Image (tube, rainbow over all chains, first blue to last red; front, side, top):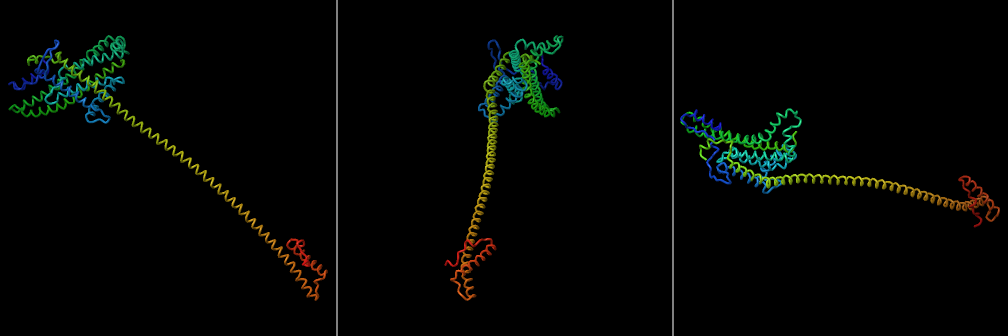
Length: 275
Length: 191
């Protein structure tokens, strides 16, 4: 299956320059050449640029957080204040206010989610990296699967195995005949759609964001190099690349927040009985 | 992986190796945050809350203390005022008493002085009367002798006459000032 972005790129390439000047960015963007590859226990590992970016981003975030709490003080320093602001944002804004009174124990997990996504997302606009590992489906999928396991486990632990599934399958206060319709929907919603949308939302945003940035950036370079009147669109394309970078910054924070926030609401449903 | 292979890849089907890589990266971050970062932050929040609450408590304690001290001072002040009023009242009463005593003493004194004066006056008067009585008797006898032309000094009758006269005189004076003089009368001829 060829991606729609690739297809669009092909069309643009054909229409804009039949002579075959501009090669639009394609799906190949997300499959850089492996720096090294090896096989371990039957699993093929490919260490690519993006893998390194993910590690660098994670390591940088860990370093920042550790530096922030290395010498904790009641009156915080600059770094501690930044760390505290980020952690409190998730702890108070999501763990306490969204998950509920029993939510504080989940603050470290939710904060880890937020920081991990944020650090990896930020790589989308950091020079030299300029691609987010989150635009590789594997990363959002891992996070979504972890969330899926966590909120189901928490639900079973808090409400009991049968009451948890019973409340999801047979919503209290719903007329009995409606169960024919609602029970399959609820099961689908809770156990398949939720993790899938969680992963897809983050992945698609970062994927599309990267495609936009690359398209405008390459477009600007190409337009500035052509000899005909199209050269005047070069600066416009460059400007758009800059504008889209700022937009991407917004998306980076927003998606990190949305992912964590949604996980918060799922946890809320797990720690408290359905209502 | 060749470019051609990449071109045909489906971005929604990730290689398993990449999932493991992502999982490890996240778990490392989760471990650090769970074991190290979050507890430290919680500790800081706790310490900060304790510091703020401690500060508030201290301030409240101080306020209570100040209030107690103020109450104490007020009570003491009221006590002192009552005491002062009592002392003033006592002093006033004492002063009054002293004045009364002094006045009584003065009255007594003046009464005594007046009485003594009167006594002295009465004594002087008696003395004067006595002296006068003698002199008047002599004078009267001398005068009568001269008028009659003969000495009546040794005559017993004369003596009686003079006494009678003086008694009359005394009676007149006693009737005049209400005082009997005859009992105090010493006969002139006894000399």
